[in-house]
Image (cartoon, rainbow, N blue to C red; front, top):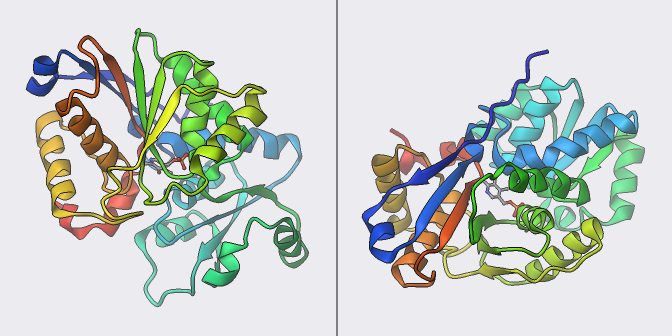
Length: 301
Ligand SMILES: *Cc1c(COP(=O)(O)O)cnc(C)c1O
């Protein structure tokens, strides 16, 4: 069978600002991996799908919001690899479904809606078990696709990078991607996560625990920046929208405002503020998520 996935090329970005500050910036185009199953969502799904097969599970069950990149990717991957997919969606069933949910349904994903109160307790093992009683057995993938198997897939990003670099940057939601990069780096180089969410909460702790449970080691060569969340998850500001438009115009690369737009905005700002020593070589991940653009009419052509 032909491999349905493309490579994720590493491209250099050329900008006057980088020359002026003496830094070199590369973008790893995870958005090019697949039209629908792109970026870190594919990386995180990959070994979960292997694991499901290994355990002879034909049904995948996962959680997400109405605009979730993870729901979207899981639905498409389930269809491609012939799994049955169940998506538990946060909140009451909307009268008009988002493009994300319409797409998921079109791929054959069964959608169930869960009220927000119950949804908050979704990871409670008792609740997962009660779902098994109601729906039948399934392979459970947590919200955002983040678990130990996710790290195994994300780690492969590092082995694909054949140039020398000092920093690697990623957007952060659950921290699974950041944790996978740390696993791949084995304590070398510096990783910077840009949080799309407002609160520090338990994010740093979660990253430590994920890396430890996968590698057996605790790595500290990372930081999470909370200065560029633009008001919180899925919140935007005119500045951010403008930045995304300029980025597209300058480099011909589309970003979205939930994750990659915020990270690149933050990266450019940190470079401007001399955060990076002269001579730094920086790799930034384009983690995909472009389906989410449908929720932002101000970015539609
Ligand atoms: C889900 C997502 C993230 C966040 O990844 P985590 O592993 O949850 O931190 C970043 N970028 C994009 C495009 C995403 O869809």
